Image (cartoon, rainbow, N blue to C red; front, side, top):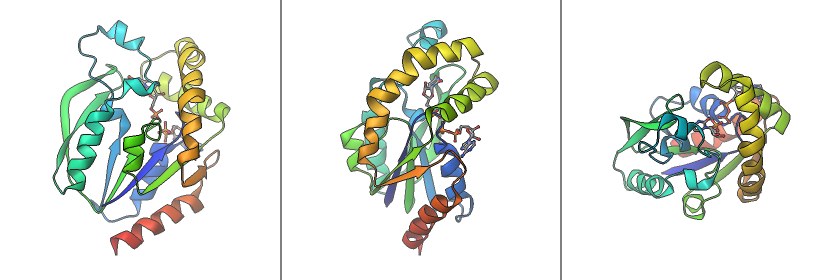
Length: 202
Ligand SMILES: Nc1ncnc2c1ncn2[C@@H]1O[C@H](COP(=O)(O)OP(=O)(O)O)[C@@H](O)[C@H]1O
Ligand SMILES: O=c1ccn([C@@H]2O[C@H](COP(=O)(O)O)[C@@H](O)[C@H]2O)c(=O)[nH]1
């Protein structure tokens, strides 16, 4: 199994890049795991308390479960990937069966910050977009899709997202084998990654 890790700050375009990569590949040959599925279970907190949680610190992720799931997939067995709700700010009770595949993509803001997870990747990619681009994309998404208003998103960006990005995410770029500039859609970079995957699949 070839495991590709794709990191980068919030709004840099990780999910978009992953979708562009897999769109033209045969169905079911490339599995995807999102770091978001592995946020700690916060069922013991109220929604109000969960909304105040720092979701940009490495401690917010259950890296032990992610490591266990990657090892199980590598050994050829399926896992039940937790399903996360951004509206509830919590893991749901649902899971999606995720089967071993020849190629597995793991994406998330913090995945290159954890040494054990990093060492499981054959290829490490960091998607870069400037912070103003990322803030604009994040604002639109949080307001339109994730149940936050403009002021809340800007407050969260200044108090948590930006400092955590500078402390943990940006420094993890040094572990990347490939950096994809993504202020604009980067079809050349997407084609290169797809070529690497196709070589593994043939
Ligand atoms: N290169 C790009 N140029 C403009 N908008 C983009 C680009 N890449 C992604 N977007 C948009 O930015 C938003 C966040 O992208 P997404 O892929 O969800 O980022 P991430 O997964 O890194 O948080 C989405 O609305 C997406 O359509
Ligand atoms: O309940 C939650 C959990 C996390 N977030 C934010 O999500 C981003 C990471 O996801 P991306 O798709 O890479 O942007 C992170 O910055 C968290 O602050 C959230 O809004 N709600």
